[in-house]
Image (cartoon, one colour):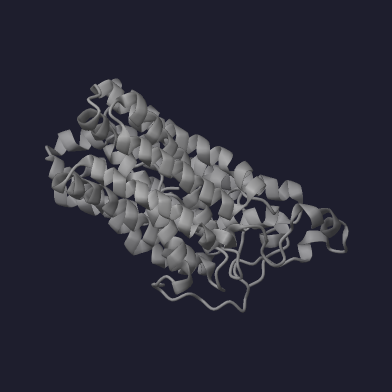
Length: 442
């Protein structure tokens, strides 16, 4: 299908238009991250309200990852049929509304169903918004995906901070999340309206209703798997590691997660400049080296002063890998959204199994052995970095890169004669798992 003169590729026909689209999609990422941060901040209240044991809570927190893994293969068809902007708007709106459901659950089974719905909407909107991000990245001719994932992290941090403040003030979480859902929904409508209307070419074949990931995306997905395994293990176990292995106080133990989360957010926000300078493969190898160094520090640590910098280095090291993995997936085949969903499914599965594997190894041996495995997977990023070569350079056919945008604008018809491509490789990239426990994010 072709696009109107004011949408699609024409909307990205000038550098200013492409930059505005970049701002819009960055705000979409921030809204999506804020949804996750809002939910995470109220997990303790949900546990207390339903009188859940740690095991019951753990079961409930697996549900978002299961929901997203099941639903993400459906996202490509929605994007193909509705177009990028409409797909992001509808799916992100559903995601915003779904965040109010968990605190309304009267029992564990209902909570699990609510979290399945939350994970499904978050996962599908994740695929759609990252598809927009990769398309805009190609039109700009430079890396922006790491910064977009950084905006996701920033949105989550801000929203979780608001949630913590609301909890401190004893604000009813049912009212808080209802208000947050409405406000985030309204904000989503505003930012989605500024997105370009990117659509598939009319000759592109419609994806199947439930698209299995293509083989070409599996190696890329395994690279993302390694990064998210290190991320999930560090997020969920860093505090326990400091307390049990290095003898840290609860306050100091909490600093491990803070160091990890902040360095990951900063690493993503600064990552585009590094990728632009050294390229995707070298950036991934550098990331693997930094994460491996951090893992080694954690393994040999006998005091908090060694372990905390180790977790911080793991955060820096894995920060850009997932954005690069999804950007590479977005350049595969005629239906890149299918590859994006495939990489996202493999990647998020890592976030699902990592905490359990770390806990099982710790039970059988020790946490030090568990983080030896994390270190080994971080080293695997060095070996698998070549799979991300697709994320380097290039732009979608018909795209406007900075070097030729002025000429295109001056030509007869300017950028308006251009046709949007979201199927050639235009729809790309599913987002990073983000910061919430077992919640999809960028």
